[in-house]
Image (cartoon, rainbow, N blue to C red; front, side):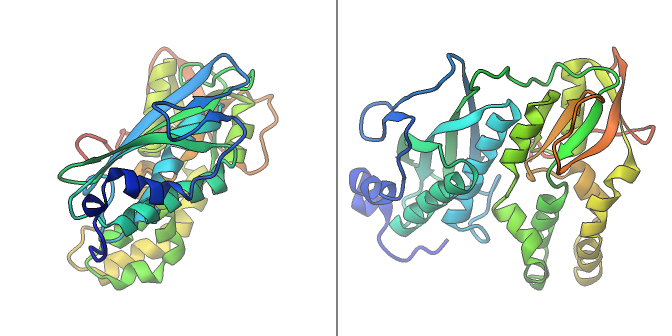
Amino acid sequence: MNNDGQKIIEIGETEALRRALSVFKPVGTTLVGPGDDAAVISVSDSRVVITTDTMVQDHDFRLEWSSGFDIGYKAVTSNIADLVAMGAAPRALTVALVVTKETPQAWLEDFASGLQSACDRHAPECQIVGGDLASGEQIVIAIAAHGDLESRQPILRSTAEVGDLIVIAGTLGKSACGLALLSSNDETLAASYPDIVSIQLRPVPDFALGLELAAVASSMLDVSDGLSLDAGRLASSSSVSMNIKKELLEGYAAILEQAAQSINSRDSEAQTVSEWDWVLHGGEDHCFLATVSPTATLPRGTKVIGEVIAKGDSDVYLSGEPLSPKGWDSVTG
């Protein structure tokens, strides 16, 4: 992070927020926006879907490779993904932000622009309606997101059925590959694969496709922590066993094979990496993993990767072999 320019602490909370909030756009469902003690929004359904997510400096992001814009964009994207995974249309976000005494005002304004850009890209009818700004030892972001079911039933993790197809909407492994490229001791590697790195910095899940999939899914979740780990969560919630077919994942791995070879050949200090580890255990692509009846019509752009095979246990298999759950742990890292 560039520490040049006025610091937020020098300007004060009121003026710092006035400058930053100027980029936020109003939407029709917000009745009372920023400026009062709380916001008021309108939803068409009496049921409101609520989720929250926290990002901590040096645990969930690093300032040496993520700009304020990147971090704001990613924070919004991860929260909207959770709403879409429940079948809800995003309507409002509140953002609580802890900054340090050294955080420049320019960073805050860049962060706010990232928040708004993600809304523009992923959910134009969603508004940032309020939040809080505080000072601490490191940057921390906590977002609460609110969604409208619009008379639909919420899509849960606990309702998969034996015989359902296992379906993916989105990409697998690209974000984890991007993280490996950014973390490499060879700084030229990230520049060699800008399209993959961009998925780590600013994820671009297809939320419209996610909502289409939710309309036919028996169960669904956002793959934020890794396919093996999140598939295990879905299997456990539904008390079913799942068999993912490795051959149906080969396309995801093939896209990342060259990047894995580059890291292994050009960074002698790094541990050997595998494109299959990224596909099976990497998170933050924010694709959607769903189970769908074999009689349903799948949305174009989704991909079948396996089948729900048994009731009672909660096992996940990869082409018949046990698939151990591995991936991102938000507490241990």
